[in-house]
Each structure stands twice: as structure tokens, then as C-alpha cells.
Image 1 (cartoon, rainbow, N blue to C red):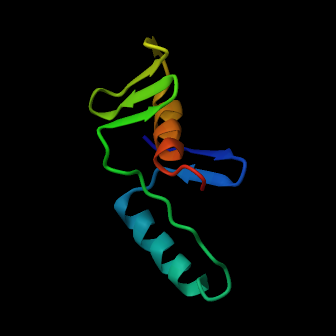
Image 2: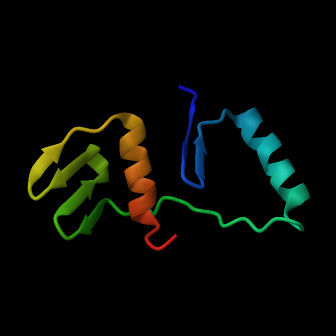
Image 3: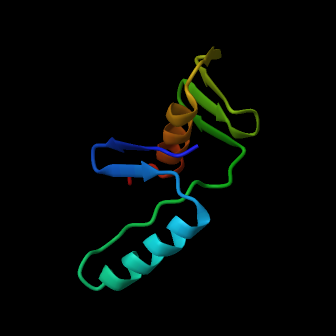
Length: 87
């Protein structure tokens, strides 16, 4: 599954291994001129916030105890943002 979405200043793209290597080389080459802030999903099994719980092992999101249905992209975006609060 390939695709991309732009959310504000965040661009997410699913890459194959070859594409990742090319991107890594480009980032390395331009890192002297542009500051990048790497973001990675934290390996927590449950992310909890007031009124919201993300159960990563089950790919479930609960809001006030009720399950919320999200697309795969919505779920991954939520996990990324919830794993990096303040970024």
C-alpha cells in the first residue's frame, strides 16, 4: 500500500526499501542546510489521554469507553501524533 497525505506541515508517505534508502541519502545531503526533526512512534502498547485510549496491539481507539472506527491512515496518523505530543 503506497500513498501520501499532507497534514499541515507533516507529510507522511509509505515507502518501499529502495525509496527509503534514496530519501535517507537526500536527507543526509541537505541536512547541513535544513533542520529536520525526526519523529518516531513510541513502542507503547496503550497510549492514554483524558477521554481517549489507543490500544496499539489491537489497533483500537476508545473515546470515553466507546470504540471509534478509523481508517488505517487515520489510525496511523493518530498514533504518530499521540506518540509525539508537543511536536
